[in-house]
Length: 150
Ligand code: SF4
Ligand code: SF4
Image (cartoon, rainbow, N blue to C red; front, side):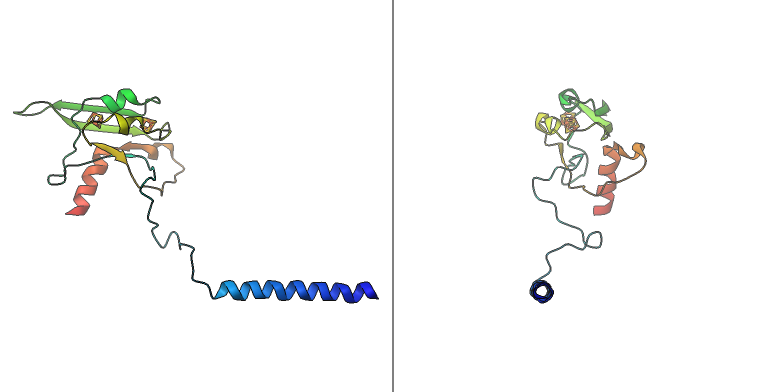
Protein backbone atom coordinates (compact mmCIF):
# COMPACT_ATOMS: atom_id res chain seq x y z
CA UNK A 1 0.00 0.00 0.00
CA UNK A 2 2.94 2.31 0.82
CA UNK A 3 4.24 1.91 -2.75
CA UNK A 4 0.80 2.87 -4.10
CA UNK A 5 0.73 6.26 -2.31
CA UNK A 6 4.39 7.03 -2.99
CA UNK A 7 3.83 6.37 -6.74
CA UNK A 8 0.92 8.82 -6.71
CA UNK A 9 3.01 11.39 -4.83
CA UNK A 10 6.00 11.08 -7.20
CA UNK A 11 3.75 11.16 -10.28
CA UNK A 12 1.87 14.26 -9.03
CA UNK A 13 5.11 16.03 -8.13
CA UNK A 14 6.51 15.30 -11.57
CA UNK A 15 3.29 16.53 -13.23
CA UNK A 16 3.27 19.81 -11.26
CA UNK A 17 6.98 20.37 -11.96
CA UNK A 18 6.38 19.89 -15.69
CA UNK A 19 3.38 22.24 -15.70
CA UNK A 20 5.34 24.92 -13.84
CA UNK A 21 8.13 24.74 -16.42
CA UNK A 22 5.56 24.98 -19.25
CA UNK A 23 3.87 27.98 -17.59
CA UNK A 24 7.21 29.74 -17.09
CA UNK A 25 8.29 29.19 -20.73
CA UNK A 26 4.84 30.24 -22.00
CA UNK A 27 5.36 33.83 -20.83
CA UNK A 28 8.97 34.19 -22.05
CA UNK A 29 9.59 36.12 -25.32
CA UNK A 30 9.61 33.96 -28.46
CA UNK A 31 13.16 33.32 -29.67
CA UNK A 32 12.56 30.82 -32.47
CA UNK A 33 12.45 32.15 -36.04
CA UNK A 34 9.36 31.33 -38.04
CA UNK A 35 11.27 29.93 -41.01
CA UNK A 36 10.35 29.88 -43.90
CA UNK A 37 7.83 32.68 -43.23
CA UNK A 38 10.57 34.89 -41.79
CA UNK A 39 13.87 35.36 -43.60
CA UNK A 40 16.75 34.90 -41.17
CA UNK A 41 19.66 37.33 -41.31
CA UNK A 42 22.92 35.51 -41.92
CA UNK A 43 25.95 36.39 -39.82
CA UNK A 44 28.75 38.44 -41.47
CA UNK A 45 31.02 35.39 -41.65
CA UNK A 46 28.37 33.07 -43.13
CA UNK A 47 29.61 31.32 -46.27
CA UNK A 48 27.03 30.69 -48.94
CA UNK A 49 28.17 29.83 -52.47
CA UNK A 50 30.47 32.38 -54.08
CA UNK A 51 29.03 35.25 -56.10
CA UNK A 52 30.37 38.01 -58.32
CA UNK A 53 30.57 41.58 -57.05
CA UNK A 54 29.37 44.30 -59.39
CA UNK A 55 30.48 47.91 -59.71
CA UNK A 56 28.34 50.03 -57.36
CA UNK A 57 27.39 52.52 -60.08
CA UNK A 58 27.18 50.47 -63.26
CA UNK A 59 26.48 47.01 -61.84
CA UNK A 60 29.04 45.52 -64.25
CA UNK A 61 31.19 42.77 -62.75
CA UNK A 62 34.45 43.93 -61.17
CA UNK A 63 36.06 40.81 -62.63
CA UNK A 64 38.93 41.44 -65.04
CA UNK A 65 39.10 37.80 -66.19
CA UNK A 66 42.57 37.24 -64.73
CA UNK A 67 41.71 33.60 -63.99
CA UNK A 68 43.34 33.55 -60.54
CA UNK A 69 40.22 32.20 -58.82
CA UNK A 70 39.93 29.40 -61.34
CA UNK A 71 43.55 28.39 -60.82
CA UNK A 72 43.25 28.67 -57.02
CA UNK A 73 40.25 26.36 -56.79
CA UNK A 74 41.37 22.89 -55.64
CA UNK A 75 38.12 21.29 -56.78
CA UNK A 76 37.94 22.74 -60.30
CA UNK A 77 34.52 24.24 -59.64
CA UNK A 78 35.03 27.42 -61.61
CA UNK A 79 35.01 27.94 -65.35
CA UNK A 80 35.03 31.42 -66.82
CA UNK A 81 35.53 33.14 -70.09
CA UNK A 82 36.09 36.67 -71.34
CA UNK A 83 36.53 38.61 -74.53
CA UNK A 84 38.66 41.57 -75.47
CA UNK A 85 37.07 44.83 -74.37
CA UNK A 86 35.84 46.93 -77.28
CA UNK A 87 38.01 50.02 -77.71
CA UNK A 88 39.72 49.49 -74.38
CA UNK A 89 42.33 47.51 -72.54
CA UNK A 90 41.82 44.16 -70.89
CA UNK A 91 38.96 41.72 -71.07
CA UNK A 92 35.25 41.70 -70.36
CA UNK A 93 33.69 38.78 -68.54
CA UNK A 94 31.22 36.88 -70.71
CA UNK A 95 30.73 33.72 -68.65
CA UNK A 96 31.33 32.65 -65.06
CA UNK A 97 30.07 29.19 -64.09
CA UNK A 98 30.29 27.59 -60.65
CA UNK A 99 29.81 23.85 -60.10
CA UNK A 100 28.58 24.07 -56.52
CA UNK A 101 28.28 20.27 -56.26
CA UNK A 102 32.08 20.12 -55.97
CA UNK A 103 32.67 23.26 -53.89
CA UNK A 104 33.98 22.81 -50.35
CA UNK A 105 33.60 26.53 -49.52
CA UNK A 106 37.32 26.63 -48.79
CA UNK A 107 37.57 30.29 -49.81
CA UNK A 108 40.73 30.02 -51.92
CA UNK A 109 39.00 31.66 -54.87
CA UNK A 110 37.79 34.64 -52.81
CA UNK A 111 41.23 35.08 -51.23
CA UNK A 112 43.00 34.90 -54.58
CA UNK A 113 40.94 37.69 -56.16
CA UNK A 114 42.76 41.02 -56.06
CA UNK A 115 39.98 42.98 -57.73
CA UNK A 116 37.16 42.81 -55.17
CA UNK A 117 35.21 40.77 -57.69
CA UNK A 118 34.27 37.70 -55.66
CA UNK A 119 32.71 37.06 -52.25
CA UNK A 120 30.59 34.54 -50.39
CA UNK A 121 26.87 35.05 -50.83
CA UNK A 122 24.38 34.93 -47.95
CA UNK A 123 22.37 32.30 -49.82
CA UNK A 124 21.33 29.55 -47.41
CA UNK A 125 18.08 28.41 -48.95
CA UNK A 126 19.31 25.79 -51.37
CA UNK A 127 17.54 22.49 -51.86
CA UNK A 128 16.78 20.53 -54.99
CA UNK A 129 16.37 17.00 -56.32
CA UNK A 130 18.20 18.01 -59.47
CA UNK A 131 22.00 18.19 -59.40
CA UNK A 132 21.95 20.55 -62.38
CA UNK A 133 20.37 23.25 -60.20
CA UNK A 134 23.76 23.61 -58.52
CA UNK A 135 25.62 24.37 -61.72
CA UNK A 136 25.35 28.12 -61.33
CA UNK A 137 25.67 30.88 -63.86
CA UNK A 138 27.09 33.62 -61.62
CA UNK A 139 27.14 36.28 -64.33
CA UNK A 140 23.42 35.81 -64.95
CA UNK A 141 22.88 35.88 -61.19
CA UNK A 142 24.61 39.26 -60.97
CA UNK A 143 22.54 40.59 -63.88
CA UNK A 144 19.33 39.42 -62.15
CA UNK A 145 20.42 41.13 -58.93
CA UNK A 146 21.08 44.36 -60.86
CA UNK A 147 17.61 44.14 -62.45
CA UNK A 148 16.01 43.73 -59.00
CA UNK A 149 17.77 46.88 -57.75
CA UNK A 150 16.31 49.03 -60.57
S1 SF4 B 1 40.29 36.31 -59.48
FE1 SF4 B 1 38.73 37.92 -59.43
S2 SF4 B 1 39.17 39.20 -61.19
FE2 SF4 B 1 40.32 37.30 -61.50
S3 SF4 B 1 38.94 36.01 -62.72
FE3 SF4 B 1 38.52 35.53 -60.60
S4 SF4 B 1 36.82 36.88 -60.01
FE4 SF4 B 1 37.72 37.69 -61.89
S1 SF4 C 1 35.28 28.10 -52.26
FE1 SF4 C 1 37.03 26.71 -52.69
S2 SF4 C 1 36.11 24.90 -53.63
FE2 SF4 C 1 34.57 26.52 -53.72
S3 SF4 C 1 34.83 27.48 -55.71
FE3 SF4 C 1 36.09 28.65 -54.27
S4 SF4 C 1 38.12 27.70 -54.34
FE4 SF4 C 1 36.69 26.27 -55.30
